[in-house]
Figure 1 (cartoon, rainbow, N blue to C red):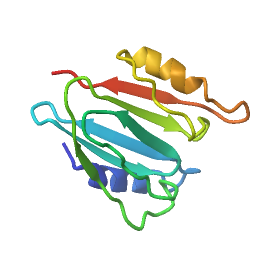
Figure 2 (figure 1 turned 90 degrees about the horizontal axis):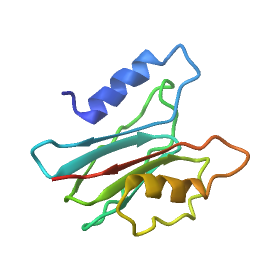
Figure 3 (figure 1 turned 90 degrees about the vertical axis):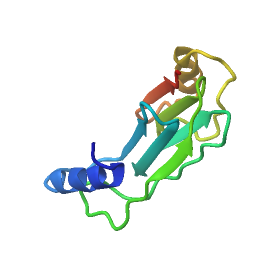
Figure 4 (figure 1 turned 180 degrees about the vertical axis):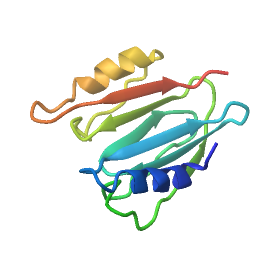
Length: 127
C-alpha cells in the first residue's frame, strides 16, 4: 500500500549491510488505468502501449543510500505490454508487435548478451 518511492527508501535501508541491488518496481492499479514505476540501477522498463510509457531509472545501487527516488506515472490501457529487463539484454532491442507476453519475453531474450545475466518480465494489462 505504500507509494513506490517510500517502499524503495525502506528497501534501501534494509539492504545497507549487503552488496546492494539494482531494482525496478511497477504497480498497475486495480481500478485506475495507471502504472507507477520507480527504478534504481540497471533494470530498464519499456512498453508497447497505446500511450507513451518511457520511464527513466536513476543511477545508483539500492542499499548504498539513495539521494532521490522518482516515481513515474503513466496511463495504461487493456492490451498494453510492459517489459522490465536487466542490463544483460542489449538496449538496442525493439519490442515486437505481438500480443502474448511469453512471445515478448522470448523476443527480448534473443538480445541477451552472452557475458552477463539476463532477466525479463513482461506483463500485459487486462481490462
